[in-house]
Image (tube, rainbow, N blue to C red):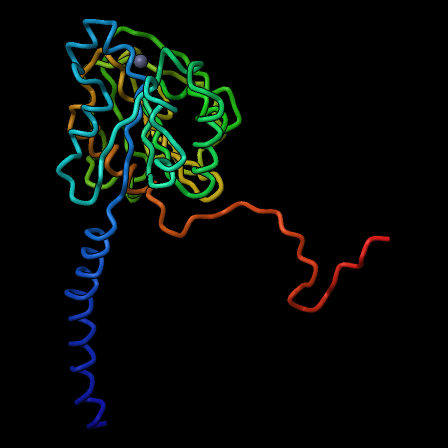
Length: 280
Ligand code: ZN
């Protein structure tokens, strides 16, 4: 009894020390040593041909987003665009990427099928994919989800109220119960997607429509997050709550285990010794 009384405070001290110092430093060290490598991909067409869009995002949506997170010590932010060789998504570059963020609208059909298949393979291996706004019609989003991904829309610059459905979800971290975007394009249901594994946000629009605006899926070892806001003529990607959602989405989609290599091996001998007879 006397021994356990003497030992107990020491054990408690050890636990307190571990919780308050060792674990946070391990997490901090792991993140410093192994930051998340992110590519912000954009077709980069609106900004070059439409002065109204260029005035909002003069360097392109991809550069705007990369710059917004450039000082985040847990991220290494790069960009890629449609016009680059292999759309900026070479095998080596994708191999070194943890999360791909995708914005497209006018040029979905110009994305080469070979590159789409390359991205799909990396997602199945574990790379995260964050699809923004009109990326709902991108080849990669449709291919991974297997549905049309259609929706209703209206460009009237109306207010959007984004409601948090799951306050405890990592993508809702540090957000209020809802936030509003003063002017946005409206998207409405029905949204032609498979039921999300997790629904984090629902949007209400000034005109009365609603939309599932923050949806999560898993495909293979990869995590996919779709986030609705981001019409090109509005400065949505400068709004702090919107950037917080994208940052949270990147964090959630970051791989948390080694790459999964898809295979179809013939297991000729089971752990219990059952064997596959030779074919005659
Ligand atoms: Zn739009």
